[in-house]
Image (tube, rainbow, N blue to C red; front, side, top):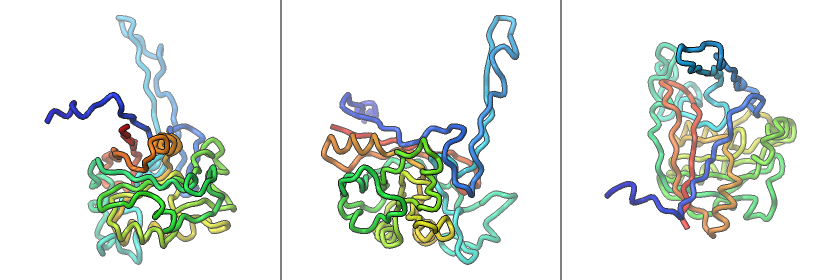
Length: 267
């Protein structure tokens, strides 16, 4: 089969990544994104008149739209599958469970559109997403990528509000995480800073969903997505399913890396 035969005029491709820009919301536990032009046009002029310009970027592996590797979380000194942390690091990099071990994903995607299901614009701060919300979406199958929309990306332009502060952030609760793990999904993503439910006043002191999905179930997480356009496009077609495409940057031994996820939607 010629892969080009799969291209059709009725396909819509939706970008699910937030833009990387200085001043964007960043978790307080990770370094902020920084960007500067290293060379400007005119700094060096070649004999034929051509000039070049390039930049330097500084960011952590968990800044912007990114995927968590299984090495991101350990419990009692053990990574997923009982791998001791002490023996997993070599020369400052994880030789196992790193983001470089995540293959490119081309999978069935399912959107859990919680605000649309509940009839609200977006969820309130600190509001949990439970099993009932997941059951209102198409049933995920083993190997699927499940994306949970809270509407929180509407606050992207207001970093303090997006990060939640003392009011908390909506997200997947522990029961919902176990429900997803039981179905053997490949990855779970969301439009919030940490994917999981952050109650008011709770901060990042407890992250049970990271423990359940990453450490126990071996399921990668995708955080800081934008899902508003995907929500509108799927609703217009009367479906919650799409083709998910995405691959994290191949950073050897990293605990996470930026990802540019895409949703492909047919008519």
